[in-house]
Image (cartoon, rainbow, N blue to C red; front, side, top):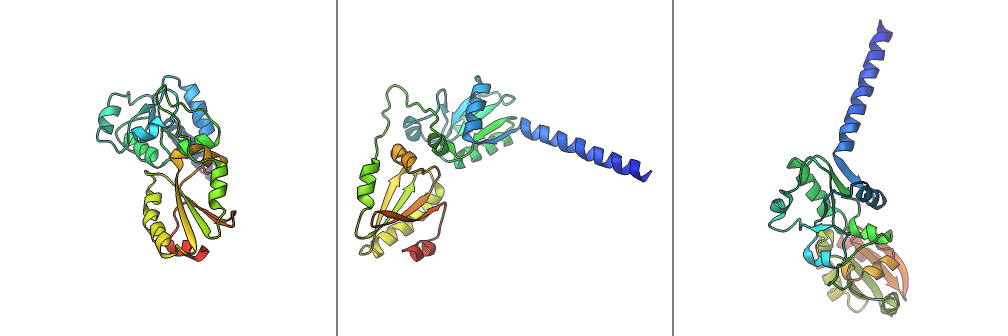
Length: 237
């Protein structure tokens, strides 16, 4: 009797787990860039939403993507025309805004929303195709040779790779400017907009933001990805 009871209990657990996994799969979720690209091919009729700003969109986006700015005033109005019962694909620069947009859409009743993990930064790093349309010119930005010449200095060179819509980047900016002023005899602080320097970021394997790099005599001596406090940065200087 006990054996039968435990067998039924385990079987019920397996069935419930399988059901929950099926429901989770049906609701979409995060996909790495390779799986996201495969999903785009698998669902050719699914809307692809680029939730960055129009300026970011013009500098490079997925083919067939529609620009619906997550921070714009008409985001809800623009997605209201989409069929909530069908799959939707969403991406941004590094995943923050697309994550927020996808969560909001699910809360509004969308059944299957796929997010690109790591956003366009990871997509570019993986050499996947982007388009700028017929009128927008791809920004040239700094070359790797120019960058190498810039970091070859008698002073320490602290390079900040950032984007205007990266929240941790904006949080770090004030103290980086303080370091630039307070330690100007010892340190040069250089901020590089990743969206305006796409080729350089790809060459240097910058595929997430923010990133700090410290150079001594032109040689990379320290790097950090993600938010870091002023105190921790100063320790490295």
